[in-house]
Image 1: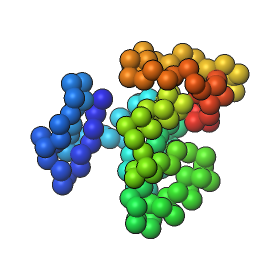
Image 2: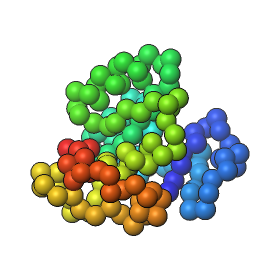
Image 3: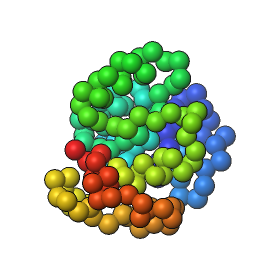
Image 4: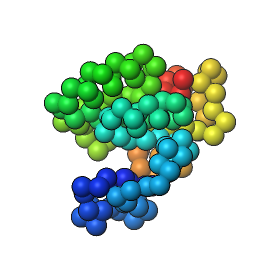
Length: 143
């Protein structure tokens, strides 16, 4: 997993667990976004539209008082049916995990099929509540 901290946060200042690589900058980020199974992003327009264009499922957490992210970006994403808006203030660590299990890209999955492919093994290790979602919920973000 790669976490992009951006230019203002020292990657060494983040206490990342094993298996998480924290970088200030990622060359060709658009390619990483297109290839990833799920992205968790702040909600900036460029990143969200790159994810939308690539068809990559994502959760976005707009800054509380940021007009563009809360209105303009959200409006555009709603028009495209892309992303899942999250509220940082009311989210717990389990909230993104529950939604990631609903939205993560799965190999050979087809959103028009009535059954969902299995949850990737990494998600089974992280969460114990994977069985609470119906197949329709598991593929909802894959349109």
